[in-house]
Amino acid sequence: MNIYLLQVINGIGIGMLYFLLAVGLSIVFGLLRFVNFAHGAFYLIGAYFCYQMTRWGMSFWLALVVVPLVVGAIGWATEKLILRHVYATDHEFHILVTVGLALVVQELVILQWGPLGDSVAVPDMLQGVVMWGSFVYPKYRLFVIGFTAVLAVLLWWVLEGTRLGSAVRAGSESTEMVSLLGINVLRIFSLVFGLGAATAALAGVLASPIRGAEPFMGVEALAVAFVVVVVGGMGSFSGALLGGLMIGIVQSVMSTLWPEGARLMIYVAMAAVLLLRPHGLLGRKE
Image 1 (tube, rainbow, N blue to C red):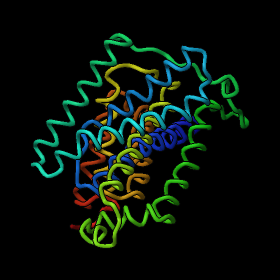
Image 2 (cartoon, one colour):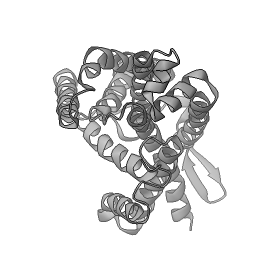
Image 3 (tube, rainbow, N blue to C red):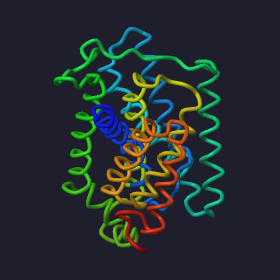
């Protein structure tokens, strides 16, 4: 039973990282109706920026603060300079532009850091394990669960208890109505896109001591993020949280029961949810 309890807790930790990765994608879609295939690239550069900062001798804690801010600014600039000009085009063009951006970022990462992965050390104060009787669990993974839970509450407050959150929620229903209220919709678009990039980068920073940084992790992350968003419901914050936890636990538990099929079961779980609820667990009907 300790093995399965360990895997469930592991799944919660992985699921919270998946939530951080997917929530930006979900919010951007809910507001802009824009599917961003470059979202995994922000996760990728978040992990590599963390690796580079620690390689320069800076602390992991500094990277945890600085990297999301830097990548969020990159996302904000990307939206203003490139993506804003393609909103009015067909969805096929959205896909071409964002996939192209993701490939450019991936190749730039390979040029700078090489095609092989690099490891990131766990912070000194979080090395080792916590023991409760016969149950043993790594300190760093417990920190990830606690930190991402606090961050989820903070993001919920931003979206539900602030003027920005009200504008985002109203904009997801009708951008024309928000514009008539005198709110600069394009500025809201840029801020939300930057926030989505920052949360993806933060997921990359937190994941780097667990899995390291490697050039193709953005593609894998994008696939998982789409699964989480589809399971939870497109445009739903609570759906992204619930979907991330569900997918994380399924993957973790199945890695014990059927290691070869753990990745497959993510997509089986998604298919099962869509059969029962075509709009996702907490998605709303259009």
